[in-house]
Image (cartoon, rainbow, N blue to C red; front, top):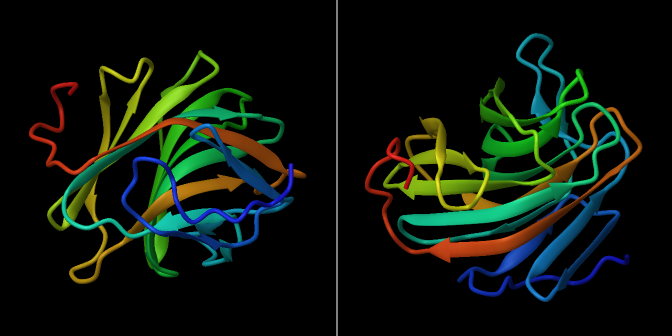
Length: 202
């Protein structure tokens, strides 16, 4: 797989660009496939302050409230390998909702919110080979959800990034301690609407 120039995703009203350099990337029949190289991550260690922001991410700007979701398949090999939906405001202010391989070699839904330093939180374990992830914007706030079927959504996190400025949204792949990771984002869906209830499964 080579690196394909990608500036549009079908059904998503944004112009996309790369942050970081993918090892490979393509869009084919609505499926975004991305490979990250070795030792790639988005993380600001809250203990040491060590910052790594070299994972490839395809980012675009969306206006107003929205829902953006995708079904993720990740080729897990090493601890912390992941594919993620991300929000990016600047190098000090960003968030990601990841399908990640744990140190116990079990896939998990993991969320990270960074305001200077990263707040890392493990969520639900996933026993199937894929998971749907969703980002919602609600005014100045955001919400993360996960789903096993793309229909019933489990609440993961509700947060605010910063008092001012809009975050770009997109797709990231990482391999923090490994030699590389590949992920596919399928069934990418956008709705320009406001999520009415964060916790009722819709």
